[in-house]
Image 1 (cartoon, helix red, strand yellow):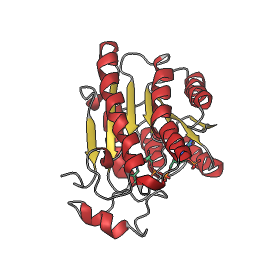
Image 2 (tube, helix red, strand yellow):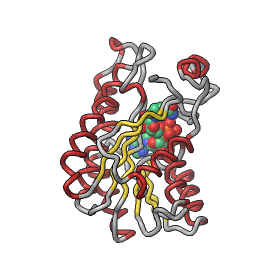
Image 3 (cartoon, helix red, strand yellow):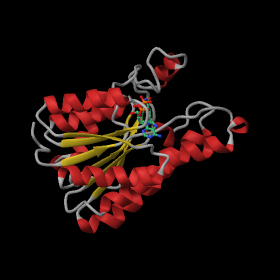
Image 4 (cartoon, protein in one colour):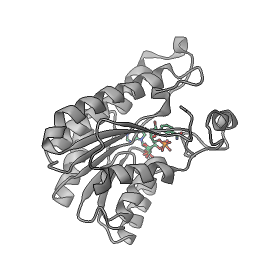
Length: 246
Ligand code: NDP
């Protein structure tokens, strides 16, 4: 499958978890891929080696999504490296959970900076490089549609905001032939939410399929949206959640 051959992508938070799976899938489908990380440099470099092993070009950029200048610089660096930018995947995210009365203002800022402001700024910066056929894909969460357990007020606030951003972008960028979509994962087995973690059995039980998803199952939908077959999908929020929101 070389659907994305000749295309260039940037995946934020591509050093592990869902972002790693997305980066590798886009490369497998033919794209050159840049990825950002904050702490996991070694892991990011290993992902880049795998991308190169697939015959594609790779770029690793250390960029804290909480830093606006770093977010913009990462987008520009990807476009400069590959000479174009066709696909932006806003994946980097953090989850701060807890009763609303115990959430510190600093956590509110940090979470909204990384989970909301960074995707906004990355889309803004990507516009300078994207043309007809461009794709903006953001990883949201099923909590934007159904908050199935207490303690998610901050996380859900940020993820729900991405729906507004995605719909507005779809309207604004449609005339330029650029699509914008949101993918809402359910419980996915990653460092953020391991399938053998304390709340895992409960989360599995919330899904219709009765199990956690794998990062590759999110990557498959991202690849569809990024490829030619996804060209008529825009402004959509697509659940890949094992039926958690059914
Ligand atoms: P992980 O914690 O496994 O990986 C997070 C990735 O984001 C890492 O690559 C990490 O980089 C990067 N990242 C985190 N903070 C920053 C930052 N400030 N600046 C730059 N990069 C950062 O998470 P997942 O793979 O599980 O999550 C990916 C996305 O999917 C997130 O947006 C999350 O909210 C969403 N999601 C996940 C679900 C799940 O069940 N796993 C469910 C629903 C949504 P580094 O390695 O350097 O720290």
